[in-house]
Image (tube, rainbow, N blue to C red):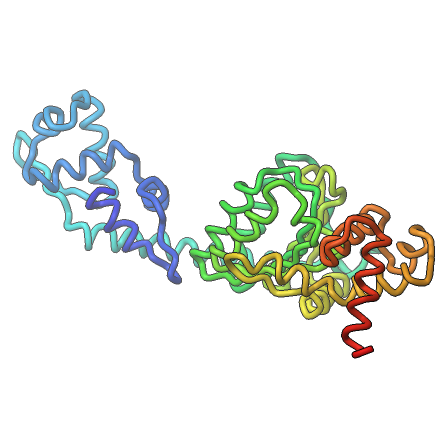
Length: 350
């Protein structure tokens, strides 16, 4: 990054968040890359004429004069009254400090306007209630834009319900969460245990942990959803086309219920550690459920009846049977039952 880019990024630091690239710094300062090049030329060669700028920048004479005029209008350079004008750069800490203050003032005004608009409610004569708490978002482009704005507006915490299937690569999810980490936004995610069977799922969990997120595993996460600062939620309408339509939830009883449900599942879910502890915590989360499964199998109940008793799908039932056999080092259900009985006998001391 250039000297100017570093100073602009430093000066634009607001609430511990600074532009992460020179391009973002220029955008924040309403400055073009060509203007930056001319300004840097003047920092290196103060007192240059427009002809000197042309020679140093390789810009055309017309373009150089336009750029110098723009910089002068923005208060970044001054021009001498001589017949052949000489240009002096204004000290960056002065010029950009003023620009940053102006931008900050504009942003504060925009936030104030947003807060005022957020307080506007439907007129009392409306039959639709005092407040629209649920908004339907349709269309892939619209929804993806809303998702980006949704995550970027988080200030304190994000709560996520996470489960397959996934329609987007994990990389897109990681990119959004890098921004949250940079803003010190806490993220807690409850992952359905079926994510362990999804291609790249375990690796993605570990990547989220490495990024500072908290991850827990629960068998039977009912929905995909995200909640920011407990003031807004986003829920896809369809799991198999999660980026086509969704519901935006504003403060309401529905959103409060979703937050309460998250906290309830968070207490029941198993914490996930780093390195090789992922499978260990996954097994801890399912131990009690597998004990119940063993008891139902011992009673000779049919698979459909057991699945119904446990309130799980047939696919999840088969996955638990496979896990049970693996735990008990058995190749068949009969062998699994025998090994379970032998373990119970040893525990009872008979």
